[in-house]
Image (cartoon, rainbow, N blue to C red; front, side):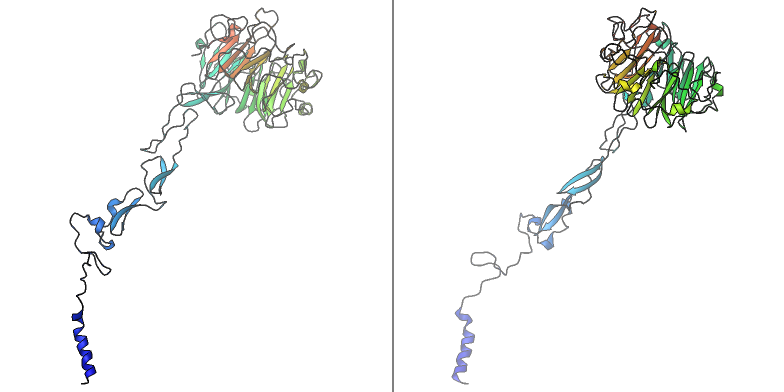
Length: 529
């Protein structure tokens, strides 16, 4: 073998002996781990497994950290709590939220249960978070409510019923929670007869001889005497043969309705000028089945009965008046009668309000209209403008213009055909009355309620008297009376009744006339039950 080959072999076999041993795999010179080390399979003493386990060794998973909108995850050998993905379903523990979802680790409820009043006589309830059910609190006794009629409503036993009052020359009648209480003379109102029917009453109207009611099914009953009445006993009187009605009005010796269906105005009793037949003979209650409607151009929504004329408001907000033209009560620039049997003359009626009407009120040879805007105009024998003039007899009733009453008007009084003054309710609940405060042959003069014996509106503005001291804001007001005395009643927002004028209409039973002299206003609460 050549010497060079031998030398190489010796170098190979002797090279390891020339160097120290290589470091072990468990420690370097300082005791640390090098890049090729592995984790010992045993957990060092006193060290939690979750802190030292590898990702492959989070034994049993991390579910013990799961919660509402929190999930346990294993990261680098450690179980940690992380926020669940947004919009993940969850339960916030509140039954008043109908959809719960996660947001940034929190369970957030949405789609809240909305509590609503179950009826006009219930308050808005509160949701119970344990059940998700709303409470159903009842409104207090006589709390105001929406009756669904043109009259103010009041709550009793969870039911909302309209309340209104009507006065004629012979009686005062109050609609009270579906029944009717009437009185006349020096008696306490609650001692007067109470009339009940198979269904609740929603409207009452009174005349000289008869009383009429409209029930909740829109059938009409009239009792008393004369052709307007269907009999003397309210308990046995049969429904009006003319059919169902949306509105009723009773004059001294006649009555009218606005029919359900065609919304035509139909009248019976002493109606020579008021009915299309022009009958000289009064039309009896029992003979009303085939009554023809007054030939208005549009359907009607309400009707008001004056002494010998009628006014109706139609669906377009126009006021139509027909019958006696005495003293300009029709507002047509003439005192000529406008009979219902003369369609051409009736249908030429101008828009006296020059606005959209919401209500008409009529009395002794006068008429007033209320517009949707809250303005009032009157024509005929009612002093209203402070200039001593009567509008409507030789000029159109519209020429008087709107009457200044100190604010927007929301309701006119419901007047009987013999009444000589009118009242209006402002949106603040104030009652303003004007017209004739002194009637012939009678010393009592307090009909307007201002504790003074004078008329208002003849030589001063109608608002001169200011608000009548009723005792509270009013929701409804009615005026009635005879040739010699008047009475006025207002229903307050509390549901209480307050009356002034001649004692025979007021229902206090103490013989005291109210409204004429200082100290008699406010009149107090009428004891009607």
